Image 1 (cartoon, rainbow, N blue to C red):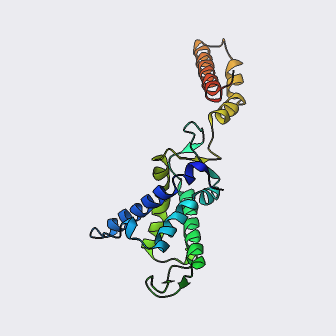
Image 2 (cartoon, helix red, strand yellow):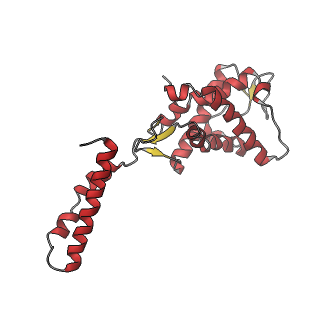
Amino acid sequence: MIKECLAREILSLAKQSHEEYRKFKRRGNPSYVGKEWEQLSDDIKYSNIRQVEGIETKLECIGAYITDDPNDPRIIHEFDETDRETLSKKEHELWVEEREETGWIYGGREPDYDNRISPYLVPWEQLNDKEIIGLDYNITDTLIPMLESRNIYVCKMDKPTDLDYLEKYCHSDEIPLVISVVGHTDILEEDVQMIEDRVESLVSTVRNRYGIK
């Protein structure tokens, strides 16, 4: 089930997705114009809508999700290279499924929209067209900015939060080690005070963020 924050933006995101496609094409060919959204066939409009509807499916592949909570501690603003490739591969996979479900078949050297034939209906590993590969990466690269422009955020489950850092810090041997030698030098006493101040500040931040009293 699509989250409400995404569902209410599907059409506007689909239209922007098409505009991002046109921008991508113009980078390779400045004279490229392409069709406005209103001029697109129903097939192509659906393809853009499918792309948006598949956002959560793709994000699940990398252990990510979307939220409209700007204070979620797991928000990320870009994908690392591993996730970027995984998402791009998944986008191509979903595109191939969509094309096959709507009657497209493999063949030809260029897409034949009238007869629904495409040479790109192959697994990601068999793609050898740099533009098509680049297009899949472009869809990934524009995903976060598109969502954030509508106050929707991408979060990564394995991104450390303040609570994770605090737990790791409080279980560290570093603090007991320093405290155990307090009194040996004035510098160590200052170090301990600095650590205590930082821990107190971090605890306060965590309490405020999570409403802990």
